[in-house]
Length: 298
Ligand SMILES: C[S@@+](CC[C@H](N)C(=O)[O-])C[C@H]1O[C@@H](n2cnc3c(N)ncnc32)[C@H](O)[C@@H]1O
Image (cartoon, rainbow, N blue to C red; front, side, top):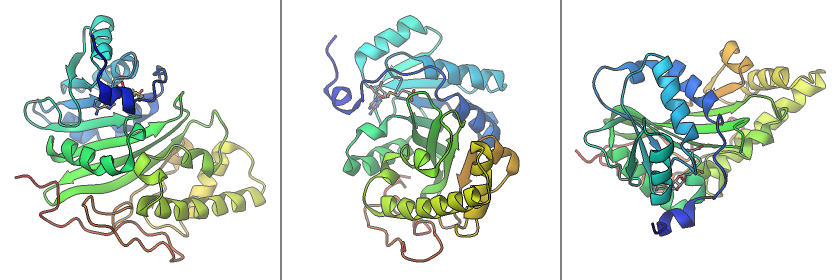
């Protein structure tokens, strides 16, 4: 079977390590339980299987153990990977396709992990727009990346509203297996927030504040990675609006940033945002998404 040129160009070709998305799966069950449990047959979609379907299988297991019976559809662009996944995991519904999802109806949630990091920045808004077109109102795109083993994981939550795709929150997460320092997490930011441009500038400011808060925690004698994470997040909240400070979640290594004005780089449109990165407080992106922007297709 011939290799699809798109996947050959955009896949990092690394091995897909089993287990690396488990923490995300558990977190989503908790946080998005209502959406996942909504009645109806709107599917959840896993875009990008990897060289073997391990993380997709694990997600299916996590959903079923959580009592969720929404159909799961795996979408992959590489025909060889599809053939392998069908052989190794006959229980999965694996379909050939890309960002224009090959599904009937609308998805409730689309997981896009470790996929967009391989794409050039100018292609990302278009990719998200295509995904959003297949999403129900209130549905969610979970787009992010991990280190190879999943010890560090980040994901942006993009919610489809009646007015457009809303940059709702950013999950910054670690299991502390590699210790903790803010830059460890910064290295794994979703592609849009890692690169230069408005998103990158805003996140640079966020991480400068977090590094400073981390330094203050260490000055107070904190050394244990988990304690430093919790304490630095609490100190960071003095400078950054919109941090969720649930102590249990923080102790589990999950920090969520959900600024009222939305995440940078702002509305998902073709217009540039004017993110104010020079203020002393770190703000979110421009707000709110206006009607008629690229995602409203009736
Ligand atoms: C690095 S793997 C990620 C696997 C899994 N999501 C994970 O994080 O463990 C990326 C996969 O995405 C697939 N991919 C890349 N672009 C895609 C697209 N536009 N549509 C569907 N799959 C795509 C690649 O072929 C590859 O199998």
